[in-house]
Image (cartoon, rainbow, N blue to C red; front, top):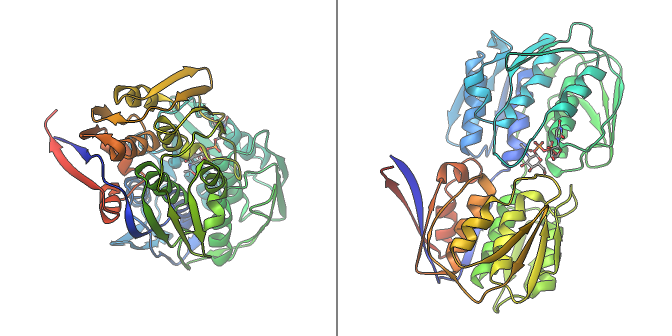
Length: 421
Ligand code: UD1
């Protein structure tokens, strides 16, 4: 048995919904708990499938994890192993985050190569180069990365590219080192600042997250703390685009609007209206939008690659032609052929998708090949004539906690069904 989402098209979104905590903030924070002495409590720890896998990884190495709905208490004092097995690692890319914290605490880590969404090559060279700069000896053999950190020391590191994960991993590896580690050309994504806030609440001395340089002054120990991760800017962005798609009027609560400035500016130009408060976004879209001539994914604060599939979907029914360019992941246009099955007119040309807007989409059976592409297909179904069946829901569940429930709260008509394959 597997599951699908059946979306009845034609409903416009209205009402309000609260945005849950950010998957991409929670995952490195959970890895970071390995370094804390005492119990760490993560409040509003939304249980996306990827989050539960990360909790399974912590349990497998010996942490005591108490899962009471979205309230998670973790005691890592009982860890028996710094070895992340292949069957866990291949389930999520974020298993690579375990390297830094395990090295920090045990000066040794062995992690199988990570899995994750199939959206491109996704190498980990920047993570490993950063750790080597901290004097970690690394061996890559038989699908495992073995790290010997017995002579680790603080250093200055320059990243060749501002990778989010590499920034976070190196930050965590350096937290307990004597002296000061400075990382230049880091990623500026808000989730990195959230990780810094969590680690500092646990006793670390890190500054600069959100800018291009992060400084870590080593401390002797981290302690258990209570922390609430930031809200998910990609889920907020997905629902904003869903509202634009359905020509609706919605309010999103528990958001940090400045995290979605790149998206909001594009949609304002296309014809949407927004009312912003410090923690909410209200929006109205009461007409067919104009196409956005050019959308280029960039590192933060540029247009996020994690909203590329969704904005591509919106362009399929906008008035005019749009060129969407993906600069981070080479195979992140798999959703295009599925959208074309629904009547869209998308042509791929290397890193770009040329989208000629059509007046309407038609319901069809389509398959999600990755997390955000899957969200794009659900959004497409909102505006399609008839019913759209989205298969591959397991991809969507990795980063949305029951997307159909949020969207139904906003007046959509979406049903989750079991199907025999
Ligand atoms: C994080 C997000 C992911 C998002 C991405 C880009 C998490 C858990 N995931 O992924 O949702 O799509 O940021 O915003 O936070 N690269 C290398 N070598 C490396 C690491 C990365 O070449 O060692 C390349 C990647 O192939 C990619 C680019 O750098 O082209 C950005 O990747 P990175 O910022 O590392 O993304 P992730 O941390 O994997």
